[in-house]
Image (cartoon, rainbow, N blue to C red):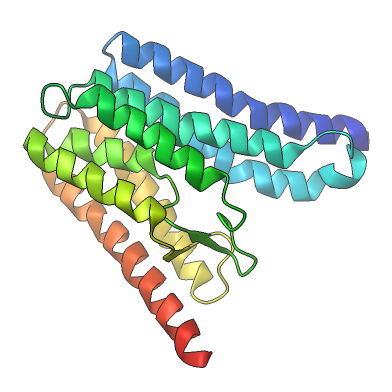
Length: 231
C-alpha cells in the first residue's frame, strides 16, 4: 500500500471522529439521547484505534507537514468536552438555571486542561482530570440521581481538573496494562449493553459498571503513591 495514502487515510479516520461528534450534537438537539450516546461511542471507537494506526502508518515521518496530534486534540475536545457538556445542558440533568453555566464551566476548565504542557505526562499519565465528560454525562443520565446531586458531581470533576493528580493512561501504562485494557473492554461492552437494552431496566448493569471506575481511580492513586515512595 502507498505509504502516503495510508498516512492520509489515518488522518481522515481521526478526523471522522469530529463527524461522529457532529452527529451526536444533532441527536442531542433533537432529544434523541440514546442515539447521541451511540454517536459518542462511535467517536470513542475512532479515538481508541487511531493512535495505533498512526504508529503503524508512521504518519509523523510520511506526512511531516501535517500535525496529526493537533488534529487528535481538536477532535478529542469536541467529543470529550463540547458534545457531553451540551448533552448535560440539553438533557436537563442539572437544577434549573445551572445547566448552561455548568456547560460553560466544563468548556472553560477543559480548555485549560487540554492546553497544559503536561496534560499527558512523559511517563504516560494524564495530569488533572482527563476530561472524560462523556462518561460523566453517561452516568448522570442513567443513574437518575437528583439534579442537585448531579451538580455536586460535576463540581467535583471541575475541581479535579485543576488538582495535579496523575491518572493512568490505560493503553500506555506499563504495570497491569493487560488487565486494565481487558477491564476497559469489558466496561465498554457493559455500557453498550445498557444502550442496547434501553429502555428496559438495567440499573444493576449501570451500578456494576461503576466497579471499573472504582478500579481506575484506585489504580491511579496506587501507581502515583508507589512512584512517590520510590522517589
